[in-house]
Length: 514
View 1 (cartoon, rainbow, N blue to C red):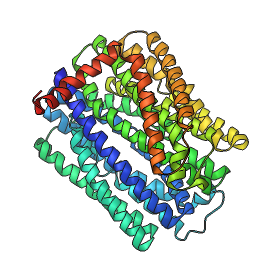
View 2: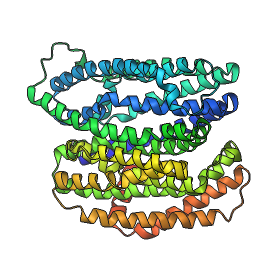
View 3: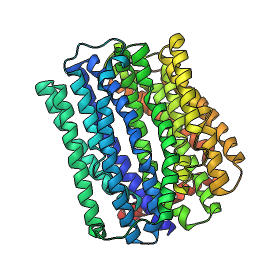
View 4: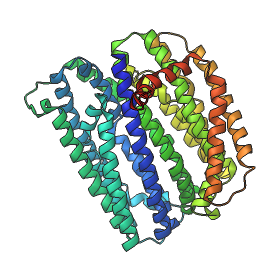
């Protein structure tokens, strides 16, 4: 069972990682063409409307997290009838969510001028916003079947499908931008492709799980409805917390600073969020395996795997954070020019937020696998209050720096310490003291290594692409080298090294006849 989970995790993670990296590269090409053909005002509009749509995603009530949790057990027990009952229920829910997003999104149209400090001279601005809303609403139809494939530890299938459709969309959008410079056609292409993608994934799910075609499957049990209702009510608050915390920065910047600055800020977010998407794919790919682990083993075994994954979590986010600190501004300058740069203080805080958020990846995966949504469910509301109040106060004195600082403050005072406590206390049935000692040591190591890498890389002059590649190589090798020297003798590192060798190294050796 464990070998199967490990193979599924590695297969899903590998495919997700490769496809997401390729997608990020393609998206950068699209963004580059976008900037050069449409300019900074359209860039700011794109960033602002994207954030508003992020706020509208609250309509899914967090049910996207509840679906996998409800499917882990029936999948492990091969209870196809129960799976079918759940899927029929989720179909109705997601169709309703799509309609709600469309309705409420369009109702916000008259209030756009309130959210933008200086209205840009862009024609059809309200129609452009309506297209954003339609794109968001259309993404909810048919998508529920994707959760079944991923909950069954077959996320590599959906990763490949999404990559293919994303590539088609990117090529189409580049052609549209170069030939027409028409932003409306650019948005319409996204709507068409996302609908086709969801239809194809739905078709694939029906092929993989033909029992979904059965119509008379019975009604959902009362206790299942109560369980889903309890989880969704708690997840809604979590969802509100995450969406508001992640989605208000551009809105506050647009309101108090201006739309052009939103455009500059969105370039940095594109890079950071793209990298975060790559890393998130890795942890999303192993979430189904964690769910299977939780329902088939005891708390001691789960906590042991959690601690090993936590080192993996730290290594990935600390390595990427270190590279971001050293390379973000040189990359922006090389990519689109000095006029698009933000100060080092903003970069440092963005990287810090990236690291703090990323260090929750494994904790969130285990919290979702255990279904601990209802524990401390009001924590996200506190996070929202802190984030909005601190950001609005500090933006008047510190500009963008104050907005990012507000986000970081809200995370440190809430999610960074409370979620691990919940997982340890209610999932593993043990105290989290060891976790927090490691967390502090990890954080200090991240800061120390990042600044060593930053000072070393800054000895190399800014210049052409080759100089940037040299900076990146030094930062990557130096950070990894420090981590290897520190962790090479630990049990957690040896565990991952052995797993990697058994599943990857041995196959390479067989191919090479070693």
